[in-house]
Length: 335
Image 1 (cartoon, rainbow, N blue to C red):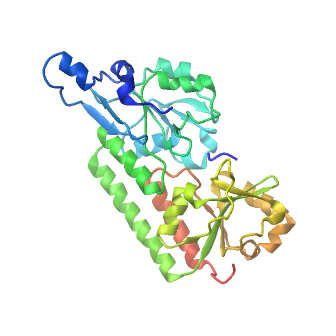
Image 2 (tube, one colour; image 1 turned 120 degrees about the vertical axis):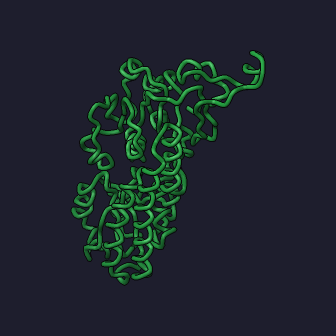
Image 3 (cartoon, rainbow, N blue to C red; image 1 turned 30 degrees about the horizontal axis):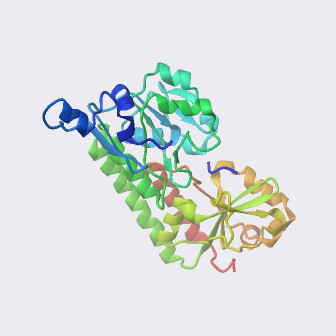
C-alpha cells in the first residue's frame, strides 16, 4: 500500500538561468562588477533550499494536490499530474481544471514530452522528508518521468507534522507568485473557525478514541500518526488517535495486521481511509473478525481525509464534518 530529487539551487544555477528567467550566484554577479541585485523571486522550499530567479515564474506545472492549493489562492498552473484518474480522486473533487493540461493520471508516470512543450518555469510538488524526494520523484517513479526535473526547478512545501504547516508553505509560495494576500487571509480565517469547532467537540465529548485504518484485500492497515500530519493535527486539537505499536519497518506510514488480528486495537471510532471508501469498509464487513471490533459492530465509523488535504477550504469542511461525528460518538464503546 502506498502513501499515496533533491535539487540544490546553488548547484544548478545554469539550469535556473534558462528555466526561471535567470538566476546568478553572488560570485557571478561580483565578476560582472558591483553588488548583486535583489532577485525578482525567492522561495524557501520544503527541501530547505532557497530558490531565486530574476523574474517571477509564470508557467507552472504542479502535482494535482499542490495545484489545488495554489488555485485556491488564485495561481493556476498550465498543467498538472496526478497519482490516479482526476475524476476518481477524492482529494480533487470539485476542482475546475478547465484549460489546465493533464500530463499524468497514474502514480509514477508523467508525460515529460508533453510537459516540455509547455516550457515550464517551475515544477511544484510536496517535499517528502522520509523519502527525501518531491512528489513525482520518489523511489519507484519511472526514470523517464523523473526527467521532468530537467525542464525547470522543483519546489514545494514540505510534508511534516501538521497539514497547517503544509498549507502555510503553499500560501508562502502562492504569495511569492503574486497571489492576493487578502484571499489567503480570508481562507485562513474560515479554517480557524473550523479548528475551534473541532476542539470544542472534543471538549464537549472527552475521551473519544479513534483508529485510522485502511482494510485492503486480506490486510488490515493501521495508520501511524507520526507519518500522517492530519492525524497529528487531530491529536493536537483534542482527539485521542491511537498509535499502533509496530509500524512496518520498510514503510512506517502503516502497521499492517492480518485480517484475523484486526481486533488488536479497540477504539471508540473507526476512521476509514477515504481514498478507498466505501470499498475498504465493505472489505472489513465481509470479514468475520469485524464482529469483534466493537466500534464497527456499534456502527461508529466514518472516514478521515488520508494524505490529500492541501487547502484551507478542504480542511475546514473535513474538520466541521468530523466535529459532529465526535459529538455523537459513544466514548464507552472501545477499550
